[in-house]
Length: 501
Image (cartoon, rainbow, N blue to C red; front, side, top):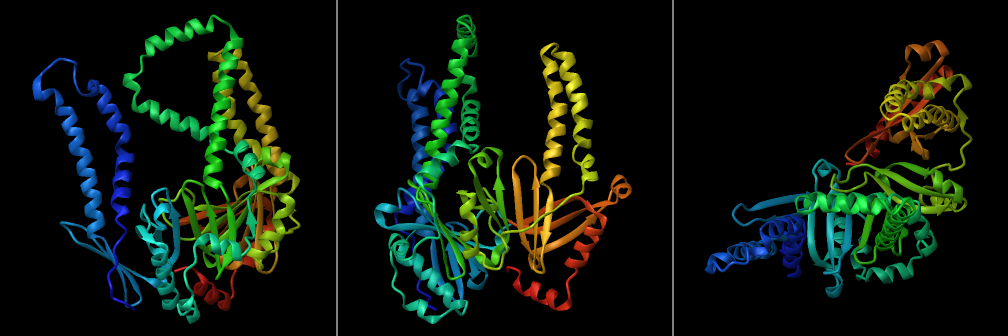
């Protein structure tokens, strides 16, 4: 392998500067506002500009820091490793064996596209416990990104003709290789309308308000609200409707930007997901890392016949928002099976579930009643008579428990286990037997009297694990599942070999 050392594109200095500036923008706004935007309005000579001088020094320091990071960053290939060197006063080196690299994720931001650049995140299973990816190349050419992939392919003893392929822009690859799935504009609109984007909008608004709370004239606002209330409940209802409508519009816009041209392809035993309008992202997921496949149906989407597909992936970085990766954010349920069969040919996607017995129903709502009774009683007492509405929690809890009982079930064959359960959304989870890390049978005193047991399965998800419970099934069925999971010696060896590094 070549020992030539490579540098990042100079735009990396600007990107590093913007990244630090974005993290400090709210504190800077607060400081500027609290200090009266730099002065009291009285002439105090040069000292009246000291606040502005401090701001200018901070901005220059941020820019210089970005330039230093760019100048001191080097990477090269040596002894089947990706080697990185960075740091000014303390020089740091990081060596990442190619055989341990799980994925290379690409991002094209607004600073990358004009220059034909990408940001590359390097992730390994061993580095997943940190809050960041194992390595991040802020801005390199697409040809350089392809060279990393070629070096990695050679180190992993893949076919040598990969090295002779010429780099092609990503949009050309998409044209030549038809994607397995591409989200339509209609699906994007439904996704935005039935997602939690509105809540994200209000959460972001709350964070912003908390940063500038000292500057908000609460007393004046309170007086204005009192005057507003006097105009009647109709105006209040219209105002609430308007705010929610604006929040919905913002949610739709964010969803369109994030999931624009969402496509899925499978190449070289990897799932490749591309999406984004302003910032185009390309995420690769090795099929060997996928531990489970979930089909999620929330109540709103069930009405329209739509589902989402989520996969549990081993390894990854805690900096990622989801350990469970959204493989397909939204799709018609009747279209899902042919697509999943192409991606996961070893899975059976038409299970015939064994439901939990009728006598298990009491275990689905007994605890809900226990904690809801004192809550409803307290609210009814302190907020009488309107607090009596809280008594509706009791029948609603009963109905939810009955709903969860009706949904719960499982199915298995020789090589896989499928579990179906519900909190609010109905979830169907497919797990290969060889991917299940642990299976435990649990029986409480009351379950023993009813001759039922619960089975807890654990698979790797992210850097930790994800546990799923099959609640209160027949005792004989639980014992049968434990016998089914007990591996032979050959299965133990095969399972050890196939686990991600």
